[in-house]
Length: 216
Image (tube, rainbow, N blue to C red):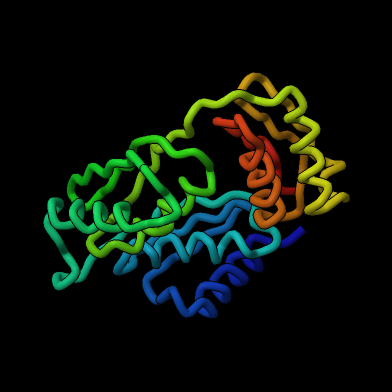
């Protein structure tokens, strides 16, 4: 069991090591494996990178991201300008053909809506849009298009889990109800949890994943 003080220091060290993050204005508290990030950064990608850095630390079981984005004056844009830039990102992205994704911008906070075929496309859009200048926050309400769910989708997901890691797969219970997959069990860290969730999302017909996997 890692002590709160040790876990806090490990996260601080990782933030300091990550060249995408300026840790000078980021605060860290830790309690029983739960880490809270506070303070402020100068752009949204840095906020995202700080949370990802904390996820990499063994012993972190949950993260509360309370970091604010304080844009420098020269990087502040009108909502209409931000929306135009996002529209260009979506228009020229070959990974999301025929996309009907829309972006609503209010006070620098972006809300994405629309439909795509696969979860990896939804994640890709989020990754691309978050680097647009002027953004303070980003909410992803993009949904997946409805499609038939194969009868054997549970076995397909379990097989995918085994291909990634047979040991972890044995500790995960997969339940399928229509187009919804529910995951239960325990893993050692966020990395393993993300692999398991990605495997579930990759199954055809899956539109929702309820991730109840705990980090032990």
